Each structure stands twice: as structure tokens, then as C-alpha cells.
Image 1 (cartoon, one colour):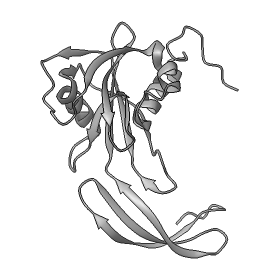
Image 2 (tube, one colour; image 1 turned 45 degrees about the vertical axis):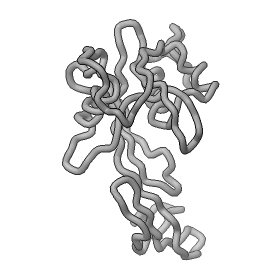
Image 3 (cartoon, one colour; image 1 turned 120 degrees about the horizontal axis):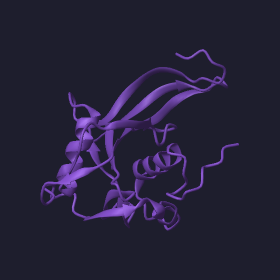
Image 4 (cartoon, one colour; image 1 turned 135 degrees about the vertical axis):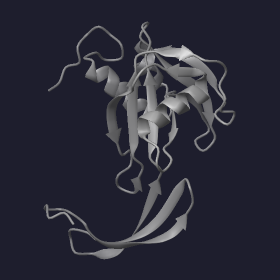
Length: 193
């Protein structure tokens, strides 16, 4: 338990629902104000994302439909990390299966983050490759989409139009652009306060 001021105390968690993709628990918690109750927590599997950038400053993405939010948009490639697998290997394999493009070399770990830490555990690992070779057609038939090399200069426009789907895609692209010192592929450095 954390001893920092404002930390919540957790006394245990009771599993309510469990399968390969999602677990739902009721955690016995005590808030900093002393109130204690059962708090719903959703646990999702670890996800590995592949950000593949080419020499023309484009990222490999899928244009696809997501039925839960009824949206069309661009996503980076990736998927669920199975027990015993490593994240970088999963990201590379998923990229090849979903797009027909195999990342070249070892992936560089960019960032790991939790998108909704107030109610959900859903670790997302992002890896960067600076090139890929075309190996054929996509073999993952469930992940149907249009494979595109999307110019990084379009990231801000696509984000504003809500055409970048999911936090894995949005965080990965914005983190990459910021870490290299440019905003949305423009030649001007990002200003920090």
C-alpha cells in the first residue's frame, strides 16, 4: 500500500467476470476520506503497438471500422500480448499479419501507458521501427482494413477530425512527433513551458 498523502487503500478484489480479453473485479477500497466500498475495476490484456515510420515520414496504418464506437478511422498495427510472449515480438508479428509489411530490425520501446487508470488496467506498450519490407497480403482476416502509409504531417488534422482511433494510436503518434522535436511533422520545434 502506498503511504503518500491521498493514496487509496486496497483490501482485496473479488473477481466477477473473467475471460481471455477482459476481467471485471470488485475491489474493496478505502478512499482518503475514510469511506470504504466495493469499486468496479476492469482489467484488459496488455497491448503492443507497432509504429512503423518510413523514409518519406509516413506511418503504416489501417483505415478500418470499429463497431463499439461506430467509427471509421486510422489505427496503428498491434494486438494483445499473450502470456509468455514479449511485447516487441507481438507488435512486430501483429503488424506483419495485419498489413503484409514486416518491421525491419529490432523495435525501439517508445512509451508504456495506461489510458484509463481510474477504472481500468490496460497497459499499452508502443514500439518504433524505421522501416518495413512488404511480404505479401495481410494474413489476419479479422483485422480487415485498408493498409496505408499516412504522412505524419496529417496527424493533427486527423486527430481533430477524430479519425485516429484509440489512445494507442493517438498517444503513439503524438509521443513520437514530440520526442523528435517537431509537432505533427512540421519543421518547427515543439515549445515547452
